[in-house]
Image (cartoon, rainbow, N blue to C red; front, side, top):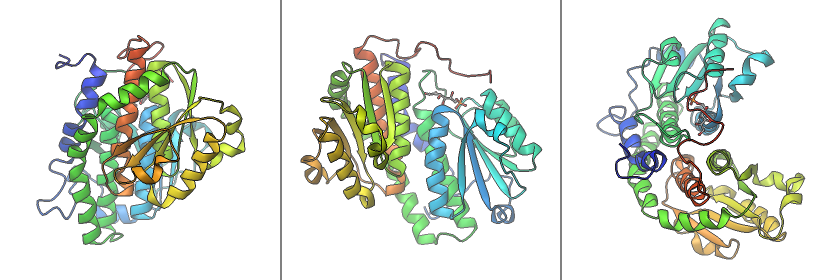
Length: 367
Ligand code: F6R
């Protein structure tokens, strides 16, 4: 049942190329120039009428939503807020009929996410669900549903569901941009072409799992570490940090790289591992100077960089892992893979139950 892998988590990490292909299948026109989402009931006119978006979810699904915010804001230029589902209802959010609420949930049964969905509908908003389970409560109650085709996810730590949620956000963002004329056909086609290369690019990353295994073994002796990034890299840093905590029980924090000097640098000591994501070219120089700040305090830095940039970065980091080149907005679908492997191998090195970490359940049906 684990298909030759030692754990469901590793199997599911390796299923991501297929999950990406399946989630895109039938949703990109044959000529590769447009997105087709016939499952959506909302009309182009309704889409045009939306003036704000709330993305609401828990845990890893929320982290996918943080990338989703970047995707929608940059492709559609509509303001997006993200919120923790267990907080959403209690802060009397401003929900108007022209608000689109997007709930993200692998299981479709998370109690807080379901409650947020109901609150949004009560206030008159339209709700779009991104979920992996057809027929789940969230799928049944939402006004529109985009199903991620990641297949069943057994390991408690979410991997392929998260990354397929990213694909769903890319598709929906492009669809929306196209329906409202926000992006021209050529740029949509360019992004779709890059998306179609992602599965093969993930395969190339997976083939280098041994490199990550070594790094994971060295960080497993530490009791605390940091993940840093800017822009979408910060969103991915948050997911990398959560994954590591939940299955290896090593404390870590994700920080927006520019925020370190406002307090957190106090925690960097000789040997503290720092995992720095450097996939956003426009933010490169700024990242390098933030990395320097940590190295000056003794940090041991692993850089996750774009292929071709190794030399430029080599003096600033202690080790690096490169990911294939894609468009800046799509990088999370690649950069998260080494972080998933890092947490898997760290947990393994420490002898923990990778698939069933302590204190956690796959589906959280209490608020
Ligand atoms: C972490 C993890 C959790 C879930 C969260 C929401 O790996 O799996 O953080 O993402 O409990 O679950 P769903 O997506 O089922 O609503």
